Image 1: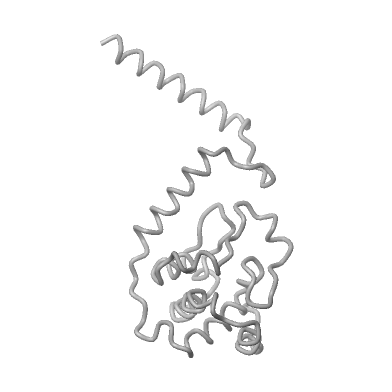
Image 2: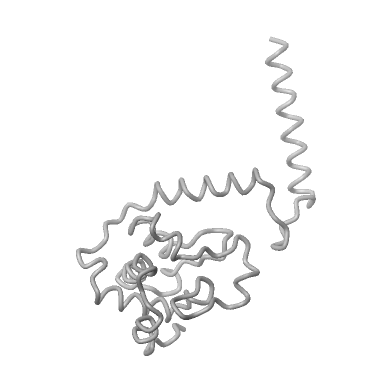
Length: 173
């Protein structure tokens, strides 16, 4: 019984200490500070589990066909995705280097994500990362699916193809 009481008391003291640390302003939320390894680990786990749980939409039958990928390139350019993630022949904007966590190189991560996961992330965004909800930015589901199809094919798209496909893209307002 004493053992359980000691564990309970220790938990209370730890809870109070964490409360003072976080709510007392001792934890720095500055984007220039690296998160402690435990925080990075926890946020990564939470993000991955959330995407896996919620990303259950089925892609349209036309997912990945040439017309959809080209429309996705145009939508990717219109919604400003290249500003943070870059694009074939297009460097990301300098300010994206100040985001924390850093925006991923989609050529490297898209292969590990399913179409449903890409769609969900683009549609809903990710809290505390700078990744916005494109649904709230006015994108319709068909545009979001086309962006997901483009991102899925991103590593195979040449600079010239992207330039041609996105040449008539108008920034979304």
